[in-house]
Image 1 (cartoon, rainbow, N blue to C red):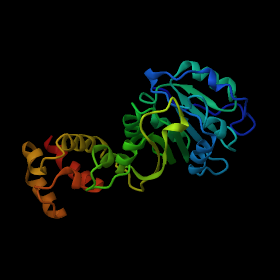
Image 2: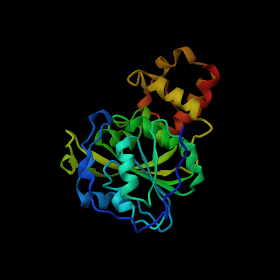
Image 3: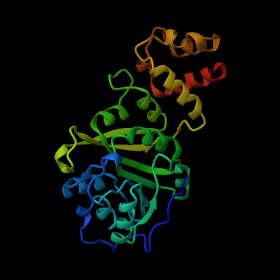
Image 4: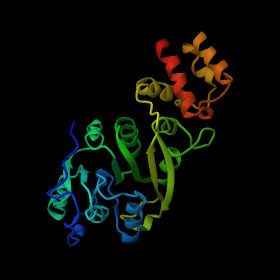
Length: 279
């Protein structure tokens, strides 16, 4: 795993460069769709609400559409990029940005503790956005905010409440670590190449009581429940039913005929604490 990089030579403004990003063609294997609308880019960065001195880490800077704006920030700016060609280009184009060559799915997110108050931002590839966010929200423990562009369908799931059609395992998991907000929709025409679906910006703020101590139990619980989300709780947990689960139902007023999508993130956390000993 790779630790969080240090910021570049000065970690602040003064390294804006001429845009030569069009030299890099998008790679389908990496799910690259590059932002091409400066107004959208400015709106995205503004939504992060950075204060002077705040450290910021961009995930997947690509051709530098957001990096170009972030490079003028008065504070440490870092970038995490998987594409080796783009890593070299970003280092030369934005010398004040600290760059690390790594895959976000293998990154040591625990290392972000070295930067309390860190904000994370990025246009995440559709094919890895959900698993990457799953890891980031549960393993970054001192961040101030996160702001990501994802496929609109994923954004709706990330910010869904229990009882809604889009609420699922990802919603329940994320909701136990952060408070999510759907910020705005991004149309396909601001990308090159243009995706066939809308994108959206989501913002996460840390919960005061994140489920760090319950993460393993919670992960097991939401996965087993939402693999059969249309079935009733009693049916799904038949092999794991116990007096403790019965007591949990009584305490929360939960009917065993309820379906997983009707259980809030907090309810699922308390259920996880009951279920793990019987696993």
